[in-house]
Image (spheres, rainbow, N blue to C red):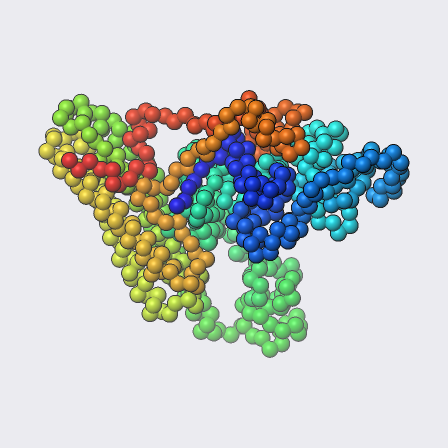
Length: 556
């Protein structure tokens, strides 16, 4: 069962602490060692368990650079000790020894830590000793750096905290612009579409806009193709030619039509054909492209066919995208119609069928618009040229297009009935429209499900299509992420669980200001139950919830 959570700046520490505590309890580690282990395995606890079972605890720790010392020697020496970094004799009390057993002077350690933090490598700072893989103690880093550069110590804390998101494949920042400050955590399949608490809907796998039933690769290729009308691309089309070997654009910087790519391939500028290295100013040995050839004509016809095919799918994609944008403007209009109808028809109190129909229209319209880029790549020669025979391609395309056309016809009918001026009609006419909207809502939902079943089982079900995963269809719409729950009851509980040696909070400074996404990490006064964001409960917000299920329809 997939669970989607919103991680706010208040709940980030709680979310990180949950995973840390699991590993600390499982392997009997302190917090800094658990964090080093999880950062190395990208916060994938299942991976940690798999390595533990397969290779054992010693290999698990050594590969991650975690050195666990049962008890450190407390013997003190008053004699001077040579630091093998700066080669100076240093008083023993100014020498710091890490868990791996390597000791150097505090100044050398501090400079080492400062360089690593400035380079953005502070999540896993390794020991300075030659070929030592051990990760340095967080508490030592914190204490030495804060004494000289408090601001860098705060940055170090920030990096440790943000690693839960930056290094975690199941947690991603919300891609909203300007950034809302939230992250999304998915527990289960990462191929899904989610809605952040800020209202933005996006594909969790690629962080682009929600684009199902297109796979992430299809959507990436489609957006790039749609943007290829820019001036830069137009200039490249006129002034460059693709290398026949590596396909990179090559610009001619001389008069000779014999051109060489940086990959070493020689080719003719006139026709783009690969050639040998021997040539003169007037000819290229063994190559002639001045004569007319049928393959050139075929190439032109093929280019025209590709352009015509692209325009077919793009125009339909654009039409449904524009319709979706226009239909979203119906929200306020529908609300006004409902208010007028309720005042005119006192016996009709429930108009949920209108809002449910509108939500279904939004959902199906989006599915339709993205189904055209999917069909462009599914039945074209770009991605699946060698995966299907011509006959198999035609059969599958005919099956898909039949379902697509059925959905399209019923979506247009639903749109027509939703836009009816029912506020001007009598009760009998309103009831007729009501039944039509309810029936079409159920029909379009069923057709969407069938189309997705066709895509997942008949089109992309073969093993060779495994890289093209799509987010499953949900009748309720894109799933909303719920805010992460969990709390520490008191400040004392927090302090008990976070000693100065392993805490993620800088106790000598103020609040830790995070980087781009989070304005700040909670201080002790902010720790507690993760607060729910206030949501509007006005009539309009409830009426036009895009995630209302089609099943919630009054059929009385």
